[in-house]
Length: 208
Length: 224
Image (tube, rainbow over all chains, first blue to last red; front, top):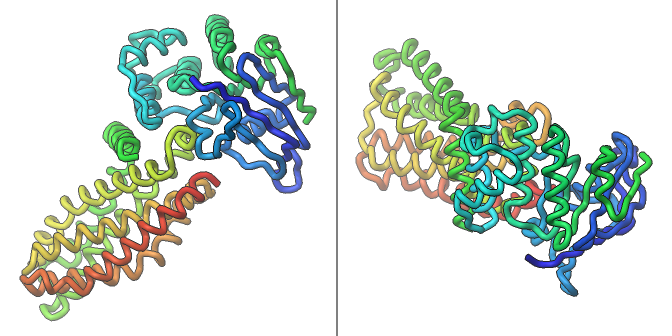
């Protein structure tokens, strides 16, 4: 797994006349967890969308570096894993079929056993893994979303409210995952949950 | 890239076989209009000299509007189900376009395989050059799938996307429809494949232009 650093400088984002982000800067480094906090509508999800490349900022820059080499924008997708409330997986497909799809789309190969093991670690029972995601509870869907973000073992992980819809055990699974990935992964977590905020080494607070 | 495009196509096929939303919409529209037309016109209510023109036009009106009722779903459903962002982060734009274009092409093939023979039987439409008609249908499907897939990508994030799809597709596909009707008339009247060549040249050119321009435009539409 490559070691990737993400820096963003002076990010501004306007939707019409409303400025959501006003000059936000920060860095994601392997081994560190950056927590983004703030009230609803403060721009936490917008910031992660800009950092992931899904949204363009009105002003400011985002740079991905692998050592001294700057990665072009088209290469960002290969090094990030993103789980967010507005990013769903396919409900007609099973959890295993979803993960198989996302590994193939990234040009990777994984056996069904490897995919099942990842789902097991996220707490999705084996008997559920081959049922269509459409019949899952919201907590089970959240576990598949997280698995989708992790399936290619990305060096950058962007998690937007990762424990939402999860019970206490689910929260512990995500906390363990962040602990396990932290040494080699640059992680950003957008959250309002004090338990998730406690994972952070650094914090950006967006006032809204 | 081919492997990724095939993965997108396989996902589309699997989803469609389980939900059957696009297939049901297209076939229901096509069968309803075909039965209504057959009931009102049948094989005998058009003068012999008017048949080649009218039946060729009717066939393509049924196929075209049935197709527009389902082909936009390839992108609209991604936005509706909030899977578009997940797909954007996982796949290259070229693979997404190729997979969804291939899926729309397959949908059109199913539509044509079912509707064209039924149309010929119910309306007594005899085609002297079935090979010419088959070539024309194949080329027309490629062009129509290319136009529909690109327009579907453009309108997917707009509100009222269904109406917008028809509004944008009809003017873009109108020259194609005219050429397809002319070619079908020629295939019905002559056993020679050469009879459809003038229309075929235009259709292939339009398909080529649409696919090449889509290759450049789609990444911009998909990411911005």
